[in-house]
Length: 516
Ligand SMILES: *[C@@H]1O[C@H](CO)[C@@H](O)[C@H](O)[C@H]1NC(C)=O
Image 1 (cartoon, rainbow, N blue to C red):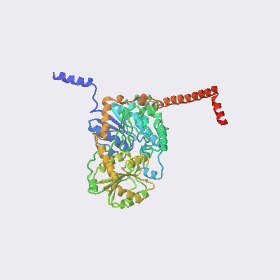
Image 2: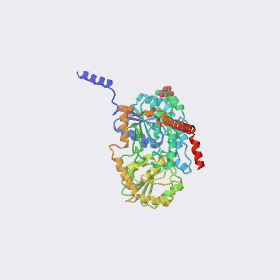
Image 3: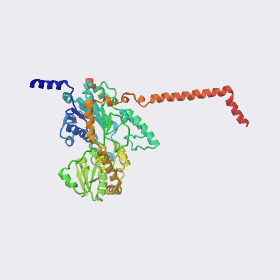
Image 4: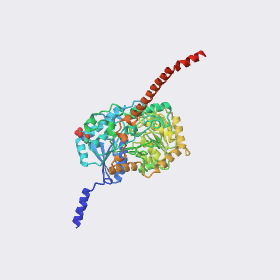
């Protein structure tokens, strides 16, 4: 009898549909840039906590990666070194110097570097075999707007996928983003645009969001690994769900479809206790945290010296995350340079009163979550837009890294750190609003991942995703009505002419007018 019931249980286990939420196998694919990896791993951490098996695809050579692989996430390595092509990692190295000289990488170069990474993953036969053997239930993939080639990985493995990104081109995935009040993420506009700003915004929305950007996307990879898909945008629209880590607390309210969720950042969570040496540095002091992100590294010496001069004028302690090479000399006594910092945990410490940032999306949301006002020095990509939105909401002030003066910076530091500062009040209110939610950002993301594992995404998928763009924008209908209006005008005019001609009225009136 015992054997029989055991057999029954086993049979039921095989026959019943698997209940994957709780014990699912989930694949993460990020582009090889530390903050992107950290973002996906933030969702991964929550998925591990919920009992899933989480795997992350990472290159075999990736400096600093050990800090962003949390316990529980298993790494699947691909051989990066043999691929030959440009790597995003190398491309972004020493960016600080180049930004000051206004030498930016073009979107097409960045897109090519990301494609090289995808090619390296897909051409690593051993890795692809291993991924097939694991048999994933779902993948969460970096939907990097400049090149979403990571989506090839789950598509080729026939695994359903969720797209995660901080950048958002709504029209790509048919979200009705009216450009009248939704500024392009690449423009330093708010939701209140002037006529000319709206005119430019419409152009950008149409050009960037309907067509792939940059336009020279390579299709070889797509043809090779997704022969049934005709364009990258089509592949993008195959995602079962979209998680986007920017919302109205920094942007502005806008409409969404049910298959998209906006989260307030993704790495902003309650702070953990600091390592003891850091705790000693910040304990019972007023602290300013300075970071220009994982990409910029060190700024040129003359700019660093301007920061130092301003920092010498404050009593606060400054913790500054710097790059791994060329550490600046004659550092002021109250400035501590760190090669790495647990940024979210630091911003959550009671001593931290101000965040000096390059306006990366993650950092801004971490500061907001913990109610810390910001001074922004935007440098590239969406950072100029991010600086404008931060300033518009009153969470801080934006400054120009090329032209700022020591006095201006010093004055702004005092203004923002004052106990009664309006910036402080605005960020603390935002912090309370963000926390007034049953789930934080990464829990929300994990919740939707589990939802898709259990139920798929078909019930949330709008037909708009399957329409051609001119139907979606009603341009065909608009054409019809313009045509009807033009025809009516033309016919009306002819009819009137006829009417006047046959009654002899038209010229008659004129003649009478002349006679008088
Ligand atoms: C995966 O890639 C292989 C190799 O190029 C290709 O032959 C196959 O059709 C792809 N599978 C799918 C489902 O796209």
